[in-house]
Length: 405
Ligand SMILES: *Cc1c(COP(=O)(O)O)cnc(C)c1O
Image (cartoon, rainbow, N blue to C red; front, top):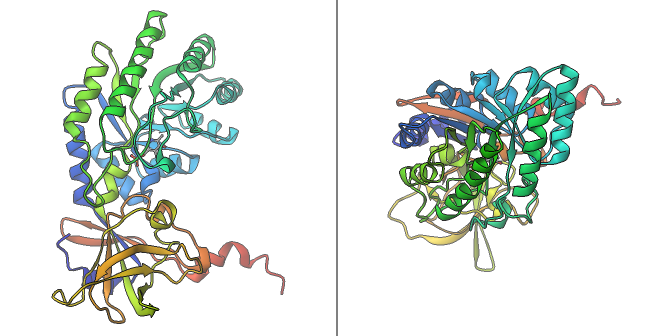
């Protein structure tokens, strides 16, 4: 980002998330163009970054939304995503969530078990409606990513195996209250290899063909999300290769191709700014203590994820030594980076943590009664606040009235 970050950090305070909206637009159009010539729908995975302005920005470009709670469905609708472009996934949905999704007439509910299908059928029956559904198939493929973000093996909790999926389609097709319109899989996140996606596409498109043979017509072929991004030195999947692999596997099928990128769309649009409080040295080990912590950016603590960290304000020519960048939260796991080469730092020096647009703010919490960061959008060289910093009052609002004095 070319904007003067010092000025923005001054203006909005730290810790601070900044998102480059032009970058997001570029990502969306690049992926969309890779699908040119085919019917396609890109359903942004809202959980990656659910700020209303981020969703609205993508909605204006034509994106749909992939949601995993009714709260996310509401966000998508509030942000201007058309109801017929919203899908609702996730391993567990409450009856009230199912009901509301049906009432809002979204594109389809993505089912992850037979038991869930029966619940959806019952709720649809109560409403006297037919629920459009898809089944999440677990193709039992190793996505070759971090085990915490791998979802396409039978040992993971997600989806159903092929035979079960087929039985569910047959059941749904006979039911007065279910309409099977889609098929779906999502084998993991931060995928940098195309091969597992290709394999999954082949397995699942074979299922679509065998369903077609028994007159069950699947209209939406959803390959999930998971396209990997560059955090460090990864070589990841190209958009055209990705689309071509999907074209190849679905050859001859009359389907709308869908995908659900989250990280791909926003990770590298985001930068996270924090200020140095002070340095300390414990028996030769250098620590840089900053004003951001694991409650603001959980990925390093949760997945041992790498984010590049650089000093924005320090003397660029000074010698660098390795330091752990840690926050004030009372946990040893509270770090943003380990062994980060940094120049000597002063109180109030500014650091930037890169590639933090996805699963950054959305995983933030109020642990240690720390207010969540402000979020700022940058669009065509102009900055604007899209979420104000959380105050102490915001945090205690739901408790104060119950306080016995
Ligand atoms: C998390 C998730 C996504 C998005 O994953 P990314 O790796 O961020 O692209 C898409 N679909 C489903 C069902 C998910 O659970």
